[in-house]
Length: 248
Image: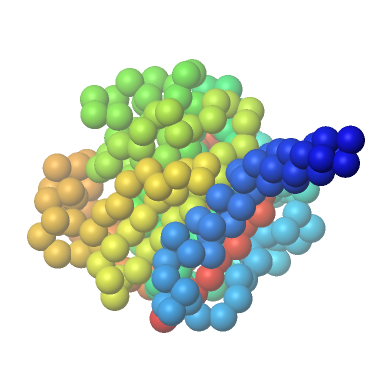
């Protein structure tokens, strides 16, 4: 009887550890896999915790656009009559790890930018900032673009994200983006799995741009230091648990 109790207790511990493996794996991505500990500078900076929009403002605006609100602890965008209601972080970043969760509406489209340079002559964040695509892969025609580079999780129009890593519309996706100019390395993790890596400058990066729609855009990806941006593409989209860690 005593041996049976011990065996059952051991099995309970094993199952409990097994059930928590997903959470541990995600933390491993955030703390170790995405960037070396030696390169990390300080703690996570909370950009959105479900209670405040103080870290954000509208692109080309001193205020947050009214289409962006907090709903059920998420940063929610609801399109209105006005367009180009993109938002950016008040602070600019160079080398970093960005972690956030996103959820897209049916047939929806949005994006995450970095390296955004703000200038009145530049009307949209995508004219300077590369984009990690947010998309309803089942319901938006962009998912059919040749090569898959317009699908969710992709480095838009340049590198495709494996579709099996993406959760469908209405479900939360965890995206971790590492940008390290010193190492000339970008990484994208989706839902705990490394999706792809990419260079940030040099011949390989130039070739990626040359084979994309951005090849003749003079300001595109020009700025190593810039704002993080979230896109108004005319569809509902939600974000939560947004945080960033600077890299040395």
